[in-house]
Image (cartoon, rainbow, N blue to C red; front, side, top):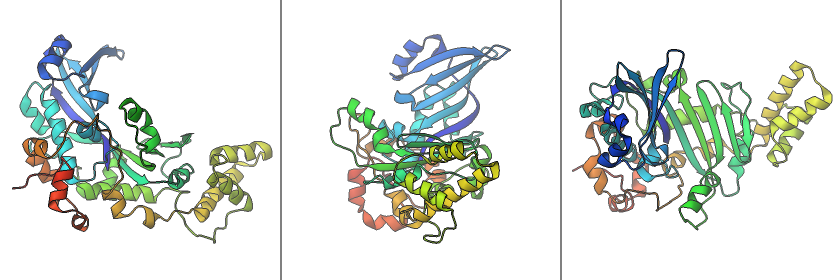
Length: 385
């Protein structure tokens, strides 16, 4: 459910040797994909650095130089890539979330001047002055007939006024504090699959992402106060709340829409994949040059018509099972960790206390799996003995 994220670190000092000789540091610390790029910016010649620690930019530090010392002030990371080497296996278990945050902590400890700072890196841990600055919530949904992907291509969000961006089966709604992306995840992973020699055809799936930043992030987790911790149920609730606000996707007022005939005609063309709603509305406007108020009315009418004709009911698609039993794509060549031994040795129990929730697995889904199956099939189940 959580994919990409950023943490503001409140300026933690980095090891000088990381910059003096990155190649020697790479070998000494066992970071084969370490990449350090230093640059100057701004009128005052501020010296900054971008430091990628793990393959495929799974962990990237933004640092600044002050008084001859280097300080990390932001870290961006991908939880799925930290655990699996790719992000096509969703973080759907509390143990996976805690394992990914523990791995981030372990990797950062290699480059921080004071190793004890790593124990204060994750927001909410004792002594931490860090805070979450961005969280990307994601959901994979089985979509064998591309019905969901097609519906998402007509989506809009009341909090986003900027023009949407669409390409093929991919759509982005870019806002200031909220970004929505929907696309066919199996298509997006095609290159990684080919590169890794995977010949099996992955299951078709739609992916919907909400990137929360600034005040939107705080509002989404307001029940958590200063956002010093959360669990999977908090993440699911935040995703559900944003998904409910999407317009033009889920069925509403079936057979009872007051949209105009023109709007219903355009909506039917969009649903049949014969053009985007923006392209078709723009074409009509160029031909008829309607007044601004007419354009606004037509846009609203198209949204109502799309919802009237939608084959998707919100409560049928975004179920609890959809969140906690998400489909995934396996790429064995990229997946570094196997079985349960790694987690038993390295998961920080302080992180478990804050981010593990009351249960490591939601009660409603526990009966679907036996303890043996969980341990045998996943490397991310904690040894709680």
